[in-house]
Amino acid sequence: MAVLSAEWASTLVELPTLTFHHALLPLSIFSALHGIRVSMAYRQAIEAAAAQSLKDGSSPPKPTRVPWGQALLSVLAMSLGGGFSASILLGMPPSWLGSNVVVPTYALSFFLIQYTFVYDLIVQTIPPAVLDPLLIVADGSLRALTITKLGVDGSRMRFAADAGKGGMVQSEPWFAMLLLGMIAGSGGGMWADVLKLKSHQWTLSATPGWAKEATWDMKAALISAFFYAASTSPQFYGLMNRDTAGAALTSTGGLLETQDAKAMTMLLLCSLLLGKQADQSSGVFTGLVKSFTSKAEALSSASLKKSKKSRQEDEDESVELNKIDKEDDDSYSSLRQRRRKEDDDLVVEDDEEEEVKKGGRGRKKSVASKKKKEPSPSPVPSTSTPTRSTRLRRAPRQEL
Image 1: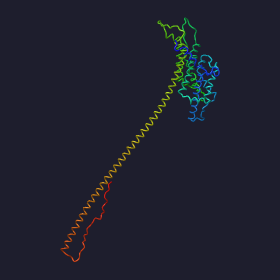
Image 2: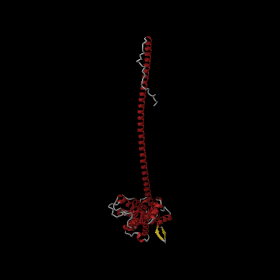
Image 3: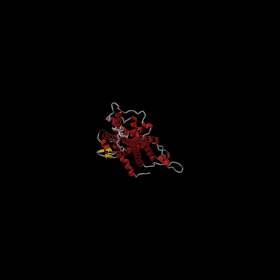
């Protein structure tokens, strides 16, 4: 059953074989992009390890570069490790041994990224939103072709049994197809984890990470291998199409044509890898949003605490001012009472002075009448002099 047209399927399958120039530079464009991706990831891992050693204070600190031979072997193992492992398990020589351009293409990409300005130029000029999908599509396309041609079809060819009686399709090696398809699509990352290739010193890992939990590359490769094997398996097609008696129909083909199945597998694997990259990017964006939100919450809480503190200070200050005002009012009222008492005292003194004045005038009149009635030979000075209060009047109270 054809899903895509034969021309579209053939064009999509033959796309990874494009070269820069068939005569002057017969290097695969997709292989160069794949080598650039692996070399960039390796360089970033080595620089991160060196920065971590400097942060930890290890003596001497790890350098940002490793010997070129070690670095080149690490990049080649991660780039070609999947096909190499599947070929060894099938007892066949790796296909890149018979090619004159595969290893030189990856080596050239490695030297351009490690020892020239190409790495800085790529990082500074091409945004990650464009660079990452481009490299992932090239990587996924090459992996899909390795899974289909070597992992699944290679297992069928290697373990094919002789045709049985009646033209019935014999059992296919499903275990080999799925296992070798997964290894062909993710073997490079598995070797990098086993030998710790992304470090300054190669060491054999006691327990690889993929043994504890399968990586996303392994899962994507396994799903792609199952899709291609199921869509091109005559046995699976026979199980899906039974007659009324329940017997499997004889068939020499599968659900999809071979070219269609390869093209669909390429699209499937690229979609899975791009989905993982988008999930990681959204995780980074979510982390940035969470960090920004936490900082904003910290700032808002700090401002809230500051406003509460200032409000408390204002309340304390208002209490102090009210207290001072109350004290002032008390002192003012006591001062008023004192002034009122002083005024009352002044009024009493004035009354006493008036009485004293009146008494002195009465005495003077009685003495004068006595003098008229009884004249004396010599005037006797009066011993009672009018007394005047020598107490000074206070200044009039000023208004507070």
